[in-house]
Length: 124
Image 1: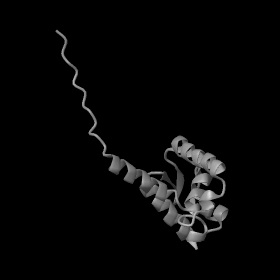
Image 2 (image 1 turned 90 degrees about the vertical axis):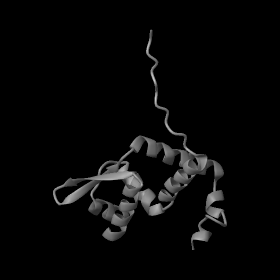
Image 3 (image 1 turned 45 degrees about the horizontal axis):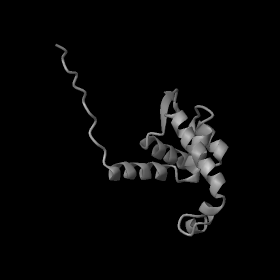
């Protein structure tokens, strides 16, 4: 007689919770400075000072954006001497999302930038 294997099923995820989590993730990516940081970190680990020089931003600004990205689980740091080395936590998946966004932008053209709600004019 074979013993039945009981598999623990994962609890169902509500559609509303899944969509809310996705919206939070996209908000974390919804800032050009954070996208620039992510793109730079796609090249490899960097210290905050490297990012400030490359982006031409204040250390406090870069640190605040890194904290946001860290809190969202997109980047992590490890100590190196008195500094921290920052890197992407899930580079392949994140790069896939960014590549998909680039493909979507190529198809939609200027529509997003011209959108009265979310476009460039709405951010002024």
